[in-house]
Image 1 (cartoon, rainbow, N blue to C red):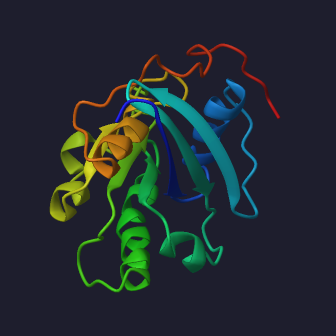
Image 2: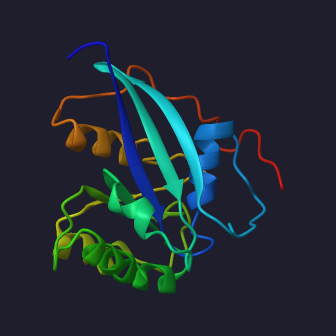
Length: 190
């Protein structure tokens, strides 16, 4: 399989302010946004990432809440559900995003696509969503990562998990980690 090119469509869902756009900006511009402006429409980010087996193009749709997105979800290969460890209500919204996808895929309980759940801002020592209260992923058989867009903790794991699962290759790995900037390098405020 060496040398192939594969294109994967991923949807990124979560409440406003959980770090979805910041996650994409790290890949697209290698910078961390310190100023939050809510996204008003779905936005496509295409990430070209070289793995040891070949090139994978992730077409990732950053979908804001309250935006009709059935058509974007319907033909997606995978999903990332993100919440903010500093805001418990964003974790409480995760089952709603998951449930929203079920009728789109015409299923009742489990989605037929791989889903990664990410709890952002895990570096904060005063986090309000404790690891022992994060259980939804176990109930639905989802992959979960404590995650930090700012500090890059587990930053590359969601896309690696999706690539491995979607291409049925548990040994797939990055040829080299994509350059997403340093932990606090190149911050900008707007």
